[in-house]
Length: 136
Image 1 (cartoon, rainbow, N blue to C red):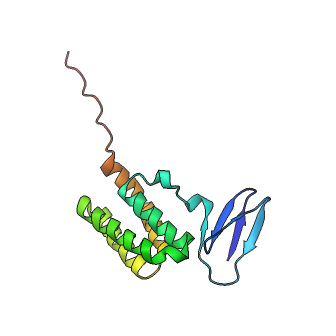
Image 2: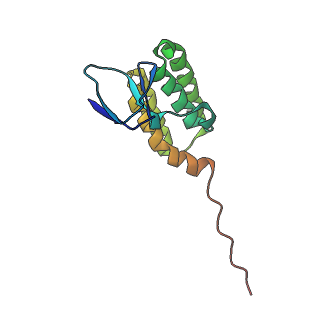
Image 3: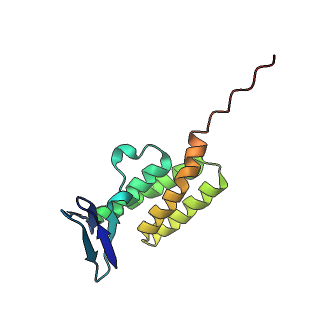
């Protein structure tokens, strides 16, 4: 697998953080766990239930030594989210995420969660209805 990075971009491989100083293409010749910088969520961005799950799954990829404890936390957060949300698409997505985590397919779980963020946004922060026109 070839990965192209721009100058100062970071790549997270098996828990190590790599930053390149110039444009580079890296060829990964064996199986590794990696994240590109644009997939990494900072702790202060984990402000909703699904983003909190994402952050914990991300920890499982970035710090393989923490996988067991992070997995237990992810499962608790998934259970809490399942009890909170009523939206069928979110509930179905959470079941998929839980299954992916059980099968150690953490990157796929993160991808599924990213796809659910817009739905969660609509549920947690619904758009305010437009002001009704005043009768004359």
